[in-house]
Amino acid sequence: MPDVLTTIEFDEWVRGLSIMGKAKVLARITNMERGNLGDCEPVGEGVSESRINWGPGLRLYFVERGDRFIILLGGGDKSTQQQDINAALARAPTVMS
Image (cartoon, rainbow, N blue to C red; front, side, top):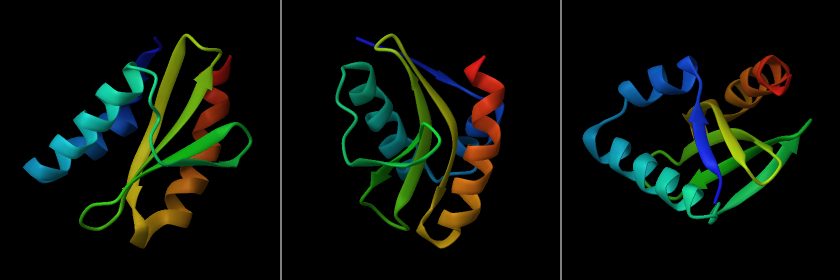
């Protein structure tokens, strides 16, 4: 089972969510730790987007390091999807080394 690690940017994003939003994100992280990534697709350069079909359409952006680590780079929702993808793509090289 992989360990799920977070970035400061991801943690700050989660802090701004509603209680229900935080619960949905925590449930997804728990599933990721169990090896179930849920509804996700690659967005490029090793970064993937995990979609939570609730409310504004929450998105979690992450990279995988083998089968041992998942690093959550950031989050957002459908309304800011392209900006969030761009931010995750820019952040990914800083956690890949």
